[in-house]
Length: 334
Image (spheres, rainbow, N blue to C red):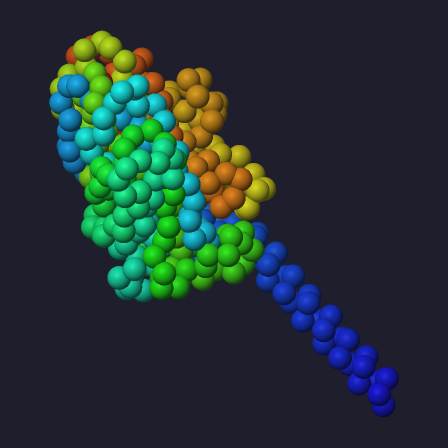
């Protein structure tokens, strides 16, 4: 009898293990965060307004830098800011972040901690930010009630320019913070997406920050919008940065999507494979969180060729064959 019971227990254990394996494999094959996700999209994509004015403009005598990081299943991660000219003095800084909740988001989702870890200085290196909910985008195929997008002003005592900053989620969110693979089948809401820091400093250009596009959603569908420039381009260098949430290469590190998204500005190929772009890589592959957790992008390009002298607006167009993601913001320098 003991032998029969032991055999029965072994059989149960085997079947239980098999069910767990099949569950994980099923989640992987569903490709969470893509149009093949088992969740689909619970919230309809947000459509772009025909034309978008800057949220804020810094007229002549300025430059900018951005940096981003993926935060899924993380407690904190570092953002690197680089590219501001030597001697530049910060005049403004903004942090953007995104959560995917399963219900009405609790208050901690509207907060974030940011610290400057290098260079150290005489002023306080950390600040607890209280963000403003600026948009709710469509669910990027994770079973959420939408992409909750926040913006907060960062004190200039913290955001002093080029350097290393870490962002930390507030305690009590209920999110996973153990660093596990987002595609291992353990989806616990709310889901942190990532964050981007925009720092504007003194320089020699006009800088415009756009977040009226926040929440524009691709469910494997094209996204397009028009940025109205504060002044016509002079024929000099024009820079453009894009940041947003939920880009990925496929399932975990397996590149089932092969990052096929493309970026066009004014009909000029900017990024993506197969279009003769100046950058053959995708702007939506989750690169700000490589190799894991992915799910956040912060990319920048010299788009001078797409914005010749006299250009007054930028027609931005993304294609997305299979991924689901949300635009958060753009920055333009001219």
